[in-house]
Each structure stands twice: as C-alpha cells, then as structure tokens.
Amino acid sequence: MHISDKDIKQIKSKGLTVEHVMQQIEIFKNDIPFVNLREAATFDNGIVGLETTELMELAKIYDEKLEKIDAVKFIPASGAASRMFRELFRFLDNYDFSKESINSYLNYEKATAIRLFLIGLEKLPFYDIVLVATKKKYPRFEDFSEGEQLYAFVKTMLKNGNGLNYGVFPKGLLPFHKYSDSVNTAFEEHLHEASRYSTKNGKAKLHFTVSKEHLTGFKQEFERVKKIVEEKTHTSFDISYSFQKESTDTIAVTMKNEPFRKEDGSILFRPGGHGALIENLNDIDADIVFIKNIDNVVVRKYQDELTIYKKALAGKLIMIQNRVFSILESLDVNMPDEEEMSEIRKFLTDELNIIMPVDFEKFSDYYKREYLQEALNRPIRVCGMVLNEGEPGGGPFWIKNDRGNIELQIIESAQIDIKNPRQFEKMQGATHFNPVDIVCAMKNYKEEKFNLLDFVEPKLSFITKKSINGTSVKALELPGLWNGAMAKWISIFVEVPLTTFNPVKTVNDLLKSAHQNTIF
Image 1 (cartoon, rainbow, N blue to C red):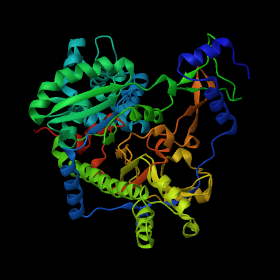
Image 2: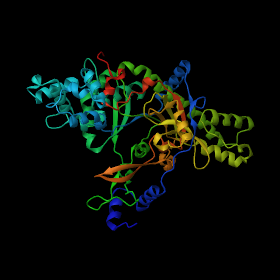
Image 3: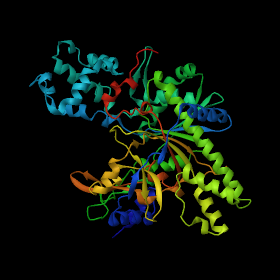
Image 4: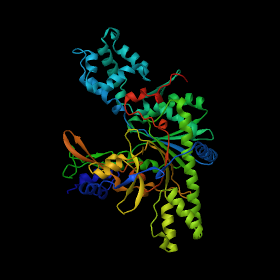
C-alpha cells in the first residue's frame, strides 16, 4: 500500500502518525469480531435497584461530600438538529401544496410523523417564534391554504434566507421548553439542572463538547441567559468548551481496504464518533464528573426526582470509591489476613461485578496482591440503567472477552451478531438499557489523575458503511464513549426511573409530557 510524502504530510497535520493510520487499515482488513454475549444483565445479576431509604442515604453521602470535592458536568453537545427534523425535510421535498391538499398528503402511510407534528404544532416551544417569522416572510400568510401555511411554516423554521435556519442548529441551541416567562434552549436547561446537584460554594462547573463552527453561538447563548439563570438559581456558572480533536479522526477506505481519496487526491478522514470524546474527558480535572447528553433534559417541574437520583448515583460512587481506596492503601502496607481476603473477594464479586479467577486461592501472596491492585486501581463509573421499553441505546450485558474473561459491559446492538440465533436470543433478553446517565471518578487512591486512554478497549471499535458521492466506503468509529472507551473501568449499574430519560431524537419528542410545561 503506497503512502506518498503528501499523504505523510497530511497525516502529520492531523496529529496522527503513519503507524497509527496503518493500524486502522489493518482493523478494516481483519474486520472487528462481534462480542460474545453470555447473558443480559438483570436485577441480582449486574443491576442494582435502590429502595427509597437507600436512595436518600446515598444522596446524603454525596451532599455531605460535595463541599470537599470538585464536581463537573460533562455534556457532549456537538450533535446537529438535522436528524431531529428529518421527516420535516422530507415533507418539504415531497409535498406540493399546488397539487394536493394537506389532508390528502397526510393520508399517506409514511406521513405519520407529519400528522403528529401538525396535531401538536401549537404546543411546540418555538411555535410562536416561528409563526412570527413566517408571517414576516410571507405577508399574505393568512390567505394561504392550510397546506401552504404548513409548508411556509416548516420552510421558515428549517431553511435560511429570511428563515430561522433551525435545520443546521446544534441541538443545544434550539428552543426546547416553554415557560410562562421564557423559552429555554437545551443549553439553558442544563445550567438549571447543574445548579441542583453539582454546585460547590455557589458555583457550578459545566463542560460542553461542541463543533468549532457553533462555539460562538454557545458563548452568545450563555451571555444571553447568564444573569437570568444566576438570579433564578442563586448559582454562578463556570462554563468551558472543547472540540473533538482532529487526532481522533479515522481513515475511510474503499471496499478493497485501500485509502479512499477525495477528488484532489488527499486521503479522506472522518470524525471518529463520540468515542473520540474520551480524549476530552481525559483533559477534565475533577473528583467527580457527571456525563449526560445535551438533548436529555426535562422541564423543571420534573427535576426533583431527577436530582435525587443524580445525587444517589454520585453517593454510590463515593461509597464504592472509599472502599476501593481503603483496600488499595492497605495492600501497600501488608497482605490481608484470611478473613479480610474473604471480605475483599465478596466486595469485588458482589459490589464491583468482577469475576475472580477460580484458582485465586492458589495464587502466591505476591500474585494475589498484584491481581487485586490491577483489578481495583482503575477509574470507576456508576451508570444509570432504565427499563427497556423499546427505546434505542446500548444495554448492559455480561460478555466473554477474547482473553476468556467474563466482564460486565455496555454493548450496542451493532456489536452483536443478530444473525446468530443464540446471540440474538440473549440480546432480546435485555431488561434495561443505558440512557447515558453516568457518574465518574477518574483519580486513583493517591489523588493522581488516571490516563483514561489506558483503559480503552480498541477491539470494541465499529466498522460502518457510508456512501461518498455514490461510492461505497468503509468508515471506522472509535470505541463508544460509554462502551469500549470505558471497557476497562470498574462499572456499577444502578436502575433509575424512566422519567430521568427524555432525549429529543425527533421534533415530536418535544410534545411529550417531560418537555411540556406552561407554568413556572
């Protein structure tokens, strides 16, 4: 495979090495094997349920610790809203108001999303904003037929040219919720939420990963709402931003695993997916980090339940971390006696979901200590899990890795061989899925930051097929941020209520009760 001097210059300009790129090409050649599911994680087998009393006790542990630690809320926020409006873009392409009525169009089987959109139109948080802009753009709007009015409304909302251009907005800057005195973006709602559970000395820290072209928009939005939110929450905000690093881009190849080249002859590199954000997370210096996606917010009347569970997850993390640190500090001094060793083994098995070697008792003291130190001296995450009601998302499974070890992991459906009847049956047995509700501890017992890149499992990458100007190519996605990128962490899974999971994947999701509130 020929790599020219020009290619080498391009590779280095992205912060990559030729060796790294060649390794990626080898992944394409060898393909990525599916994971080996053993069984779905369920209650009493990897997922913990919390009774009300324990919930409050864990939240109290976090509250008592908060003033002594640094907490940061980490929000992946580079996602564009274009997918939210996919059906509306299709409507603009397919509907001709001069040839058919809107009622006729809505009778099509594929028009379900448009029907729901039209029914709930006035409940959308940006309805009044778009209507004013539409009437300004079309002075004869009131004389239009119902179909032409809807077409004009959607076009004004999504398109540029005297329109609002929502179709290219990042989700974080879209109006998500309407109150009696304001219309709030998802970005603003994250500030309100953070003020409830990650505030120290009256200040909340948030970090948003954004696209470079949208950074100015996010900064302007913060300046617009800063004073309003600070007065309502009695909280000041320390906001930081970062971009997905170019060095995490991955090479695209032809179906014959040769570098795919653009018209100018340069190699095509593509963003490596949300797994690339492990680099951004690695740059965060904090004792506890809350991870939550930009579109998973609720109107504030539902935030009390959300808050108590966020605190409880953090309290569980602190409780686990205290025990882990205590064991590691003890191991630095002497070997545990037989009774202590029995308690440690029980803790690893029952609390940390670590399947220990069957012949552990036969290890020498040296190797017992070495095993325990390696098993425990890792980043820790507590992940909320919600009951699976058909929503898309990764789920908790016990898998057998290529070393023959049984591990508890979050696995995406793309990693499972659904054509294998046994694997498909095990996937169907999942009772929960991951809503990206994660609390992390990323320092060791000596208060040193872990290098999170040491705990990524590269073999849990994804290969996807894309079309570039009609040509099929293969693309490589890095191990997902909460999947393979955290595969070697200590993982604890806790059930949280479905009310804490309210992503906005389509515009019609904004019509759900979690996003509706006209009184504040």
